[in-house]
Length: 356
Image (cartoon, rainbow, N blue to C red; front, side, top):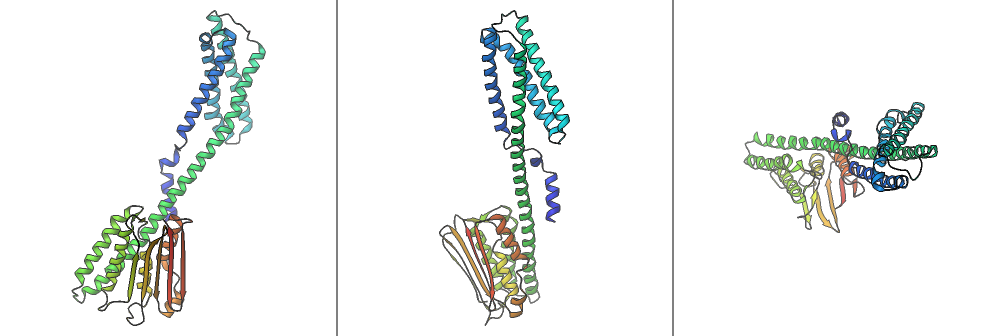
């Protein structure tokens, strides 16, 4: 399911096709380079015609030829031939392009000076033509690695975008796995009480309504207020308590200031659900659950312990809910969390630390 969604989403995502992160910086770099290069050519031509105003026309002709050379090479020859490893055709076409643009720069630049009737302080010689060829070759030699570097950064950004979108797809998948499970259990509780016409049924419906409101509206965001998550946990526990006439031996304590803390939603509920599903909490004498959540030294600490039946402890492997939590912690808090799960002496124990 993840793979199908991921491939479908990637092949239809316009953000992946066009990378814009470095586009403005690349365009600015090109502009600054040509301004600087044009200034150097203006100085050179000033030595031939004896004046910057006179040198402007041949400089523009020279720049035009070099621009044609550079961007035909960058936008056509490199992607069409070099990137496809057709090096022989690439080399021949680069030589032809270099020769034609150099002839254009040499002949048209000289003709403009001649037509305007300006006297030359230096003559255009064959050596000057060779120098123009070398200048064009220099641009080809520097644009090749620059394009390779640009492609590298675009590839890096593309891979990062793919990872980000894959992460979002996986998180949506994980949340989709979790939420229906809660709803299914809650509806089962209400269904059981409705058969006995219990006076507690309206209260369970209200608890379920609060839980559904949280799941459907609050959990749409990446992060929720931790106080809302805690309130959801209390509602869940109260809902489970209503299944028995007497109070279950369940304790959930909170310590610290949670007011300004946000957390990924539905992160802790699978541990409580696991305890009520696989534990022996309905054994009023021997079953128990102890849990605490606290904020301390910039970290959020959570632990939960509960008794389980011997055969359940032996066969318990964590379940889908606990595996989802493990995956979500790895995805959302890489290198910022610790997760310990232990089973011994009919007690299932979980400890989590998240660096805020």
